[in-house]
Image 1 (cartoon, helix red, strand yellow):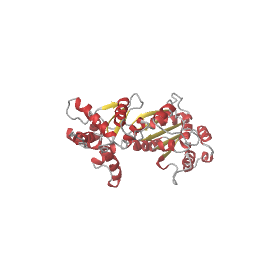
Image 2 (tube, rainbow, N blue to C red):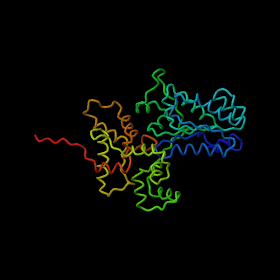
Image 3 (cartoon, rainbow, N blue to C red):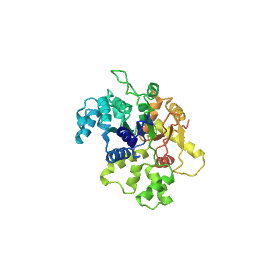
Length: 352
């Protein structure tokens, strides 16, 4: 897409698609940030008329946060000593860039912070970038609701419990499903993926190593690198974050009931434990299980789907799928599945 936008700005290619970007969502440690940074760097090096800006939106609104996307583009052009650096306004700058044969690319990591910032000015500027036919935009995040943020459908956001701006009663604009497509960055789920990865790293791939690596990492690239010793020691905080996906909720927590139900689904299959064939359940069934788990409690949540997604954010469940119809939930990792098998929650036995 970066190449097509650069060729279009240079006048060597005609418009053949309205698509202007991708939104990448997936678990922590699956390589989204690395992919985003690599594409940003390589495209700017290989395409002389392609100007890129990259931002980590984690500190959106903080003291180190730049004024806006327009300022970041101005800075990038200033480094190139380009006269367009003095152009005011994002939309006029993008239009003027076409006159100079330039294409612009915006790369945003942890993009949910732009949507959740009040008011969501920078998120709405992403919409402006997507509307320009020689510009493109790529965003990434590990949150479960990024796809819904991109679609911007009011009924879907209401269902997920996403509140509007308390002052304006509005949310961030839709980034338009035709312009920005949602793409799920999946963990490794098949042996052949590990075989290809291990070949690339020069490690001999045995069945024992592949199964052990999958149980340890849960298919997350960052955990695989740690396991194989390819990650710097000072990056240990990332390993700690990955380990969170192997933890269990308190035994009295409603999520524990969901994990036990998943374990029963797996047990009914009557097969030996296979880390590559963990059970998954559709969204509707998980909501029904959660409703039953909360039914007799005084503090039941008002939005069960939002509550369910909070368990994914906590690392207790996994979630995959790019739409509600395709969404499935399951164990956070094979190691967690083994922990549930050995885990005995407290039981109350009446001797009346």
